[in-house]
Image (cartoon, rainbow, N blue to C red; front, side):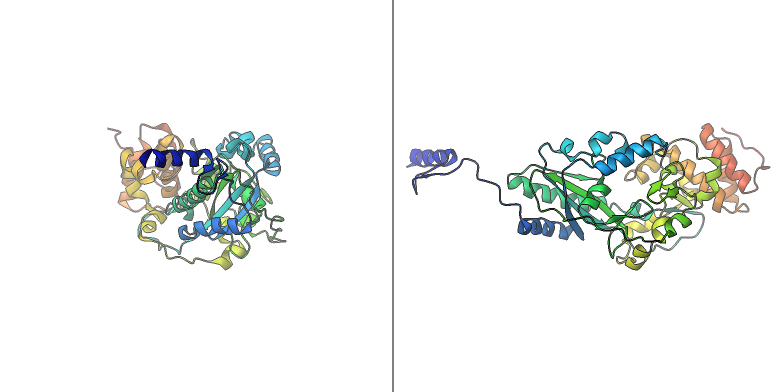
Length: 382
């Protein structure tokens, strides 16, 4: 019996069924990628906190490519790479998955309730960086990609990845419209969302048309930007946007340092005044992990070793994984919010005005002058 059993299995794999004497195709066709199938994919994401999904065509993102070329030509990228690095790749889903037919897009909310400011000099962190909101979204989309592959399609998930302009595919998928602050705004929900996608050869049902503009005459985001970085609706000058200024390497321009205020990583101002975002409001209490990330004790940070800083900041973007950029930011914050009469503030500033790193010395000297400590006696650098 054993040889016949083995032979029967082999014949099945070749497409011949001895039981019903018919030939079956060697590779069964993939299930129809219809509306019901799309709904199944969307349901797979729900346990991971995804609230909005849609589908965009896997065609060249022409509008995004024009916008990228325009920003580069006008010198508005300030050395920023991300999707600007290789626009022929980041605006073409076919480069990610040859033969792709559609892009499944998902949005997951990240707005958490406020975390009270602790005592002492504290630096503010943008909300998206309090906890890793991309991790559950990544798991959600990898689950979708596995389902698609199991059904015979090619599929690759992209989350927090420079391979694709995620806001553009989300717009084409009917998830939201582009606000005047260049963020994607979701109807009735605002902009506190992280985005991701799955590029696939499945021809999923497409959204009939993108969401219409919902900003109207509102220009609150333009008016509130502390550095006037939003130079026209939907166009941001990266050199003045604090979200980029606090990430990029190099010297922070002197005219921007006071405007940094207490921010050490990111800036939420243009979102916090947006009417759709205000109406959405915080719906989730901040987890315990967020309490240690929403505010950073500036003096403790400036006293930390490089290894300690890298461990603390490992989940976040840090140019060249170099902790000097975080120290630079902290010195500017200290100059803006520090108490000149506080002996701890005086000691830390004095330590850095004689630092071996000329970049840190420059920002420490600015902080000392801003606090009225420019006449303080110099300390030994030993």
